[in-house]
Amino acid sequence: MSTEMLEVSGLTAGYAGPAVLQDVSLDVNAGELVGLLGANNAGKSTLINCVSGLIAPRAGRIRFLGEDITRLKPDQIVARGIVQVPEGRQVFPRMSVLDNLLLGGTLPAARADRVRRLEQVYALFPRMQERSAQYAGTLSGGEQQMLAIGRAMMAGPKLLMLDEPSLGLSPLFVQSIFRALRGLNAEGLTMLLVEQNLTLTLSCATRGVVLERGQVAIAGDAAALAADPRTRQAYLGL
Amino acid sequence: MELLLQATVQGLLVGGAYALVALSLGLTYNVSGIINFAHGDFLTLSMFLALAMQVAFRLDPYISGVLLFPVLFVLGAGVYHFLLRPVAHRHLLMVIQLTLGITFVVQNGLLMSFGGQPMRVPSAYEASLILIGDELAIRTPQLLAFVGSLVLALLLWLVLDHTETGRRIRAVHQNPRAAALMGIDVPRLRMVIFGVGIGIQALAGVLLVPGQPVEPALGFRYTVIPLMALVMGGLTDFRGVYLGALLIGVTEALGTVYVSGTSGMMVPYGLFILVLLLRPQGLFRRA
Image (cartoon, rainbow over all chains, first blue to last red; front, top):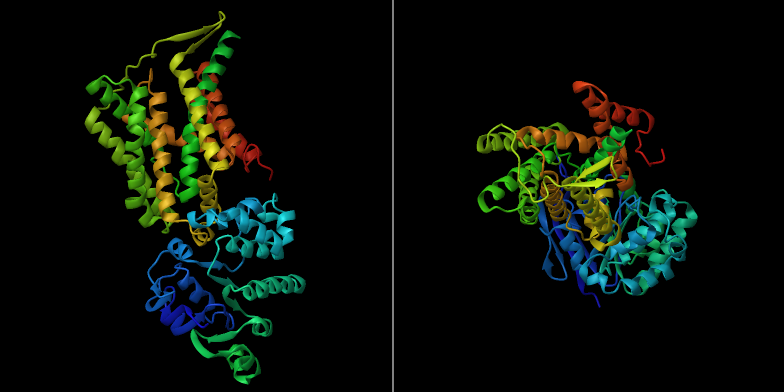
């Protein structure tokens, strides 16, 4: 049951200047939904960008399904089955919703399944089908978030990493996005969910990891974390 | 009236060839983010290489073009990978200076190898004319250049708008970081596209060369004029760039005929300034 999928160990990373992440370790097992929590600048995005190969870590190792992927390029990491839904959606604004979705499955391995996966995405977010011919830039923020998730699903991910999907969305959209994520997880998709929204994340996660100023402050079962007062302290940086 | 018709048609024909150069310049710029001031020099380079192949093997420029495409493709990809990519994320001025540096290397390399006097490259249809009625004479090589450029431009548009590769290219243009997260190898795609853009210069070069005197300093003109067409068209709009290039071709021809001396050469630039003032977003773009 608990086969290890992603294994991050001793990761230190950052941009110019002091490291944003200091010696962070984290595991994600198959079928889990792990919430990666923390305040702004805690290093959450840096961590998943290291996993995606967008940032080269200074030290540490990242393994996926037993393979060392620390030094792989972003496209090679997507090909391994790790797909990221980036912060701020990052859809292709002057392309149709359909083109955006097709781009999600542009890798040779995913292209064979594109028609089937497109139907699945439309079933998950019917609104995407209604809007399929529209430019992505004309969608609302919530619709763009649906598109970004749908686009990532087109790649047929083994591990889906989401960077703050609730950011800037109306409560109604947050609910429908999280309902969709819960559904995907229930169907067996493994997820690493970066969020600031503590309560919402812990309500659907199996486990949680709280980062505080680039280090793991506290980690454990979602229910235990939700009950533990230290979670909120770490979160608020007290 | 006769003169007006003749000049307009000639301007349109030349403008069609400018359009191809503008579109290839736009392709490399939009995908790599680098504005290549040496773009026109690769066109001159291909003209001189066609000359060399004519002298050495009696090859007609139209045939040389097919052989020169892969040569300039590799050259362009190499220039991007080894020279431009290492500075691409640095200050804009560094990138501009580097491409200007390439201009000097190519121009002076040609000057050393071929000398500075204008030369002509013999070609099969060089002197042939097509007469339409009594009033209009079209030079066959110019017609070939127009048609060849149009075909290549349509091909480029088809690839960009209707293929998976084109979709990837547009993705890298609109958001390279997100494109990488889709699994697209962005650095490799940029290198290939730069190669294609420079490769197209080989084809444009041989289409333009028959009947045209070539000299090493010609390249700057083939950077500036297409750049104007590109900006007039709004950088990514095919129709706009094409129309911009045709307008420049026509105003250039009319200016040469109707305005005396060198001031005639200024007419296209006047048009350019006018378009920038009235439609800065591009000829067909909504603001």
